[in-house]
Length: 134
Image (cartoon, rainbow, N blue to C red; front, side, top):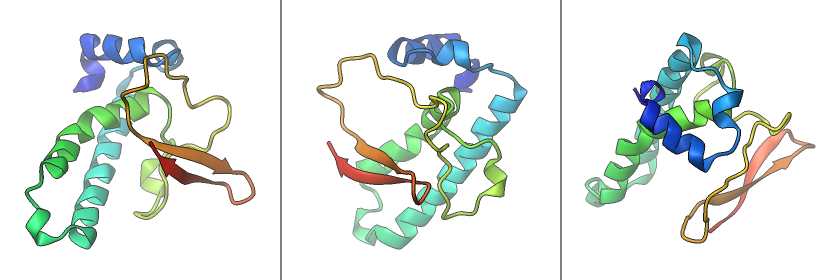
């Protein structure tokens, strides 16, 4: 389990400011990470079923994402980005916390070679919206 690996936590903490001090790693956080991992696997499998052509089922990117679900689950919980009660949310509902009280941390590494997407919070609708990719 990533959340029990001091070296992994130290490496994560070196990239994201304020995470290690802000979150207590206890049985609740470990259970939350396990529940998030299950939810992510279910959503990923559904994505593959609905959107991936059979000829692409062995594509390396699918293996890459699948292999990285456990550390991403741990990272999202450690960073405090996930809602508290995962089981209370339906399959199609967002599991990210709404951006209040500084739950999203500032990245402190060289970002020029990283890729990702830009999210913004629509306060009127109360949702996060993907506005682009980099």
